[in-house]
Image: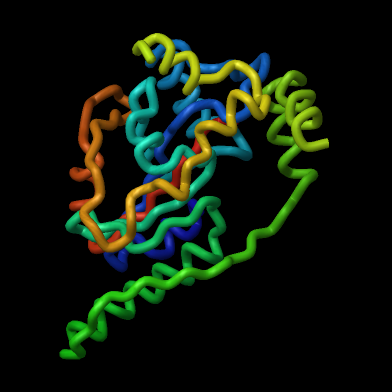
Length: 156
Length: 69
């Protein structure tokens, strides 16, 4: 997603990461109890080698007001227009899915500039993401052994 | 639910279904094509902003939600 943000930065596309709550709290990154802790975890996300988010990171309120209003999924992605209208929402983040969508929406802008009259309509579609269990478990281990144990207990 | 109950439940301390499943409510998230709700957010330097101040900067804005864990 960082590379995607860089590829589209000069085409009128902004990209941010919105810090929510700890989905898999562990000994190293426990559940959040203060905004100071939330800012620290968010800065660690920016600064940790191999994890680092290079997009601007914004932090939600401690009670997750924004995250909860948008459905509270642990790693979802949305695309908004400049007037604050969501045109894409996905309950998981997949770079191929997001890039496919953003290319489509940039093309809509070009078609409108060329004079086409376009009206919106709703589409439902299943997209597919890569499942990399080894990488996922490596991430859980970074959180602490508790995070690994709890995920195994929940999903086997 | 009191504010402290909400904080504790949202920031759950264990990844167990009884604690994380109630938050998975994508089906009731805001609809596409309608103006979306705005919220205060904070930069890493702790300066407050608004979600609307973010999406208004570009033709399109991609927002990925997540955390360290």
